[in-house]
Length: 316
Image 1 (cartoon, rainbow, N blue to C red):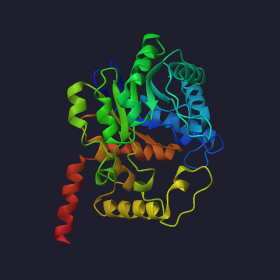
Image 2 (cartoon, rainbow, N blue to C red):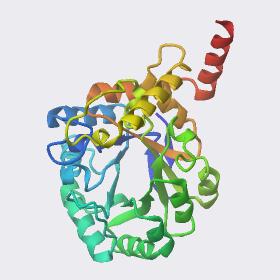
Image 3 (cartoon, rainbow, N blue to C red):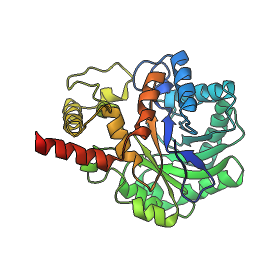
Image 4 (spheres, rainbow, N blue to C red):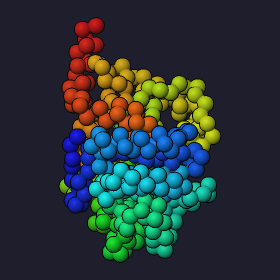
């Protein structure tokens, strides 16, 4: 495992991080299907054993359950104060979908997150998907600065959907990190991914956090185009057309893979090789998934894997 500084922040993070969306569980809120807390705790422990020091969650993940489970498990493992914990706020804790980035709401949300995590401060507090209008207005960054001044967060950042939103975040000096989607699929969608902002973020010292390297699990090649997802699984909201597109793209990228690496490891390696990315967070619900995902750090660089695939194709 390699460890990198997240931009100009004081945070040193593992190159692979643990995404705690999945362990929120359908029983508590939206997730990636059914979870078992005992298994989730073992997954967190496996991540620690693999050298993971960065854990990313949010108050809306399982409506607080992800934070509570993560905090209690890290405390039981006696590493709660030894790892970097990032969480997010501003999103709705119910089904309304409404967001509120006011100082009073965010302070209340952050204090509730800290109680669930069992810590007096969070290492990185992120605005959870503000709109482009919110970002350009700039008031949300003043709020984040106030939370940092109050000692509730060591560093502050933003989690966004698009590169356009990320570029707007770079205009605000308060923003210390940006989290956005980055995977093999996002490279074919004009405003997704990370390519447009990598150099600009590096020049400004803003840390980059890549999420969804497996594209909601599709790049792991474990989904069929006609899959039916249980209620509460976020993938149930995908149209049939989108599901088929994701499955088809995953098959195309899988055809590039050579050697014993799994489809998931191949996809994760692609993101790991981006030098400007501080950490890549990958979700997992079981210790077996964690072990498979983290084995990607042992693979050769992605461009070498890609060249091998092309050479094998020419020789076939």
